[in-house]
Amino acid sequence: MQVQKERVNDMIRISPVRVIGPDSEAYGVLDTIEAKRLAREAGLDLVEISPHSRPPVCRIMDYGKYKYEQSKKERKQRAGSTKNELKEIRLGRSMRIDPHDIEMRVNQARAFLLEGNKVQFIQPFQGREMQHKESGFVRMKEIADALSDIAKVEFPARFNGRRLIMIVSPDRVKLKTIAQVELQKKREAENAAKKAKEEAEADDTAVSASASADSESAFESSSSEEEKGSPTDDAATADNAEVVTEESTT
Image 1 (cartoon, helix red, strand yellow):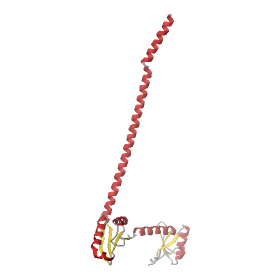
Image 2 (tube, one colour; image 1 turned 30 degrees about the horizontal axis):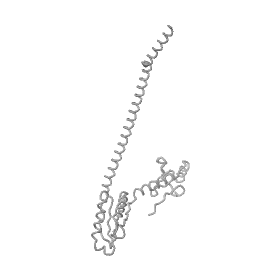
Image 3 (spheres, helix red, strand yellow; image 1 turned 135 degrees about the vertical axis):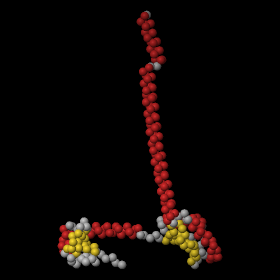
Image 4 (cartoon, one colour; image 1 turned 45 degrees about the vertical axis):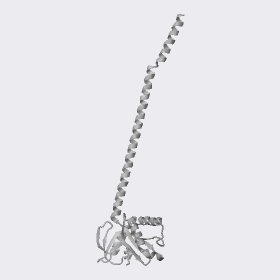
């Protein structure tokens, strides 16, 4: 379906038209030439917004800005309505696949599911492996169990020729719960880090204060000793005084 493009300025041929101003004021029914003149004087465009009304409704606006805003809205709507994809994961070429490879594919499926995508597992069978179909169902159940914390089985394991197929989809309720738990853990970690930082700053402040107090105490003690003088120095001073006296007497 082709979207009808708005008629703008000289593309509007019908007359008269009902005009709405740039600030939503009603100008009433005007001759189209007069409406175009008003738009030009305002440095804007005359845009037909309701062509099927009688008379048609036109608005004076900045058409370039209007189209830009419309484009932004459409892009936002398309982004919001993007459908989730169906991702396909093949479990090797046959049942003979290494358990480590299966684990890697399960982890890949987990990433797809966390993004909101569905995942289709395909287990091919070759030759006489078809005689042991139950092994394929066991494998699919193990995969479903491994992903049960975030996903649910939408299409149970079923054979399509020589391929066993199962589809799992994200479990919205479980994913929401996980997201809430992760958010709570993040907040707790941030609070713990903040508390540890505050305690470390408090310890640094206490150590600094203690060091300052010790320094002041040591300085005061040194000053006191200098004022009192040492006993040895006093004794030496007395001896020197006696010697001087004896020499004077002689």
